[in-house]
Length: 504
Ligand SMILES: [Fe+2]
Image 1 (cartoon, protein in one colour):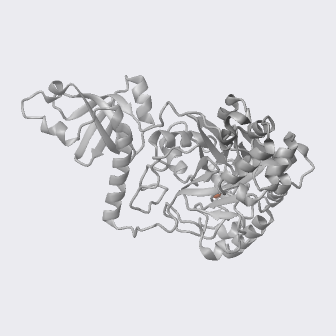
Image 2: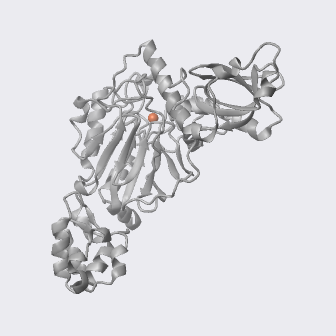
Image 3: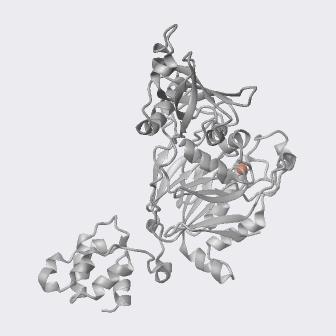
């Protein structure tokens, strides 16, 4: 039995098989017997037969398989090229890890907001707590008695709090008001402490931060010596995924008069493998997933005067047009669609998935999720967030701009929160659990919203802003925002390397 025989055998049985597994089987003295044994033992959830599925034991001493082949791990790439006629949707599983859709409980009452911020505080402070010996804020003032030089007596102290105010003194120092559930305290960051001051410049309202420092003699102010963000651990291992490619896009804005229809149609052709370009055709062959991070359509009534910039004035017609395009995408490609601020769901975040009356027009290979949502694409965890909070971060954090959107996404990783600032551009629906807290670290964070492409690594998390299919709008001209339309990041799910395909 040669390699192709083994491969064909498994394909006909509905499985893919790794090169290592093929090698083990071929080098076995009775390959047919081993194949039968493997097929009897694997369960229906296995899509790819790897070395780990091959148990030689029943053949034991008689089987004569070299012992070391037993510990070879399944590795990619697979023999995809031979499989292209057999690609099916079931090869491209998706599971939704977190999503507010169908789980929303909030009505927007005052107490819900209190609970929402307490939940944020407790979850983020737990991430920081192992790294500092923090005390409740109320204990700082308890140790302060009249006439006693409280600060000196206490030495270095640490607190973890939510930043409720950021001010600059007349000398340029920063003063932060910091709250925990027991009280609030002022923290001074001196301009002369250059590194610390630079860190403080990146702090934003309502994020949860740890501070260590000493108290002033009157015990009323902490002079910061250390700022501790929740951040990602430094030990994050570089991941490798399954096989094939995931295509990321967002901000299609179907229905807008500046929607770039022809390039978009070339993109759909690419997904269909309908292209003369050999390199594109080879990539197309490997596409397993398409992820859309919001603003599928332009919507209606999103900004004043929008009606003058629409080619399709009715929002349902916009979605019907979108559905037509998605019906052209091959059925084996799993599509995930999450909404954005132009979509027909509530504006307050987290947003639920699009309603049934809209979903009904789309084919069954489309999975709808809310915003944000974490999904697992055959072993790759991707966090999809439209990215409205980038507007707030551009205004609040030096270095974050519309032309460098992934800088804002780096801040999200450091905050371990997608949208900390309350009361600015992002309106928040106070759900029981703050859905923006990053307890679980994704392999990929995928945002959109700002219409500019960006790809950046931060501590082994791949950050991608997937640009747009809309040309510059009047509003963007006024705001001096230059979009980068029709450029599509494609992530290799083996190496997580990203290539940019251009359709303009
Ligand atoms: Fe958009």
